[in-house]
Image 1 (cartoon, rainbow, N blue to C red):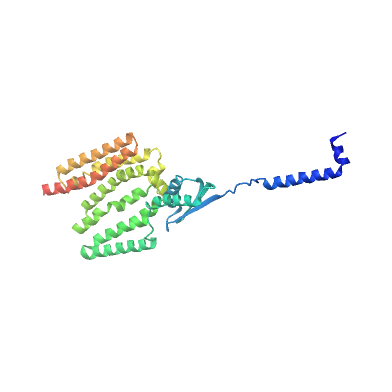
Image 2: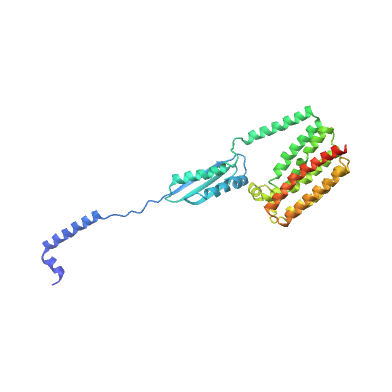
Length: 329
């Protein structure tokens, strides 16, 4: 007899047993712990920064990239995306799964503020700066016209126009902007000459020539040190496009060599004596040697020494010119 025959011959027993099994099953089911899938959440933090008037290159270089680098050091970051548009930087930060959004936002805020503290506060708007600048130029020119003479005022206005109208727009367009900017950069001595002499005679132009050629080793040294910053800002300085530095240091050495002889011109045109002549040659040769030394190992450290040499060179040269004039008077 099979085991199942018992339940066939005794249906009541089969029914009772079935009910017992059903009750036990229901009881077991009610006591069963049901495991649910855990709730998952990915937090998102958006960082928007506005600098009215800034172009996309400046926003990317000086706002978006530094903020991304700082925020990347915060805890709980999964990945980031960003866009840099005119006047606006937007960074979207995606947090790791189930990471505390409030905690992450607080830490991100600290990181962002550490970067923003090093940037312009935005207190002055472009329009306000424009009004202030134009007003300063006009008032300065009027003051020179009334208190000094019309020639000094004219050279001052020309300096401003060349710097703002020509040099500034070219900075983001061509590496030749440095040579263009060296013209208004060299004109201030001519303003003083016109104020003192009432003319634009040869001596004033000699001073212009000295300052013109001096600017090349000076600003090329600075541009070499900060070439990455210039690149992020979209400024077309020669070291930005001249990765190896061949053209940059060729320009430094060439203009430094020219400066040796241009610096001696005051003695040639009768502005100074023989003492100034040899002093100018010595100072010029020292600057040239520093340029050659920096070229042999084109490091930022040597470029910084070259920058310091140019900063020291021009005041010492002009002071030597004044002393020679006083001595030989």
